[in-house]
Image 1 (cartoon, rainbow, N blue to C red):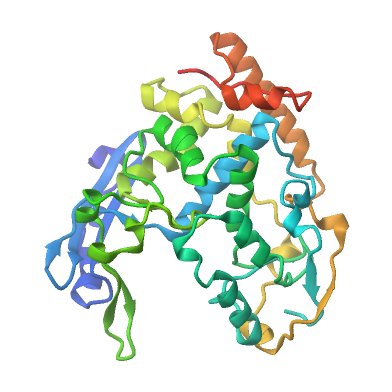
Image 2: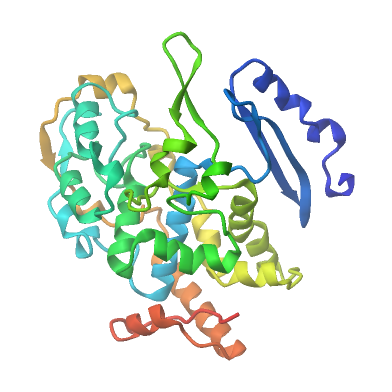
Length: 374
């Protein structure tokens, strides 16, 4: 382990144990991958504080917004398939969002907990009752009622944009988002413990979820025996997966070290590397990992105090900035075309054939890339 570059002081779990001892968290699973191997794997604390069930490496966690990179990869796979284009208006595929409005008062989309006042209550109403359904069309209808906080591409704000992206993936692929994730991402990477719900057998490994109560003490928010994640028909969006540390490490490798190694030609072509490389060309992985926000966009964050004063008075959207991609003086579509050509060359060189997703899109698009068959 020391050869991986982590000395014992940095790897020691005692640095995290104090958070468990203080009661700040129930338990922690730590997993670090470095220089081609697992440099640190440890579990401390408890999966459930009341029963004192110990935390284990295979504990299932509700990974919340760590779902967002998975959704982004899924969308880029559709881009590479030639089925969507980053710089096209979203209403081509999501007509519910054809007539967006923007707040006139200085204040995309937010969450109810990243907004305040009247706007926060409006977002809460949009999500109310959708925990138990899987119908993205109805949800999009509710989203269409909300005003954008600013013109697309003008500012960045933490919100439901990736949830909308998940609805797009489901609409374009014509399959539930969880099924797309499973067939195109989880199965190729061997992520057997990741999904939008847990089976009764998996529930035994699901960590109890806590929130901070009025007295500053942890209060159970979701218990494995009655968990919302036991409902296989629950709403599938850009932020609701359950996963393990090992599964998410597999996904991270596909988006990081393995892709970089493939690009440099230094990859050791194990089965794991091959499966990771099959998801996206390294050009699109690099694009996904690149900062496409301008400095002005990054520096123009919205304060909650601004949102508290905002009134829901809609203005018209600047449609010149209503595509998926932020402009930065460089054509994102040019990078996409390069990635498609690279993927097409990879398939031709390996003798692979496009799968049914690519075959379906071939009839609709002039430029279609295959996916390596492994």
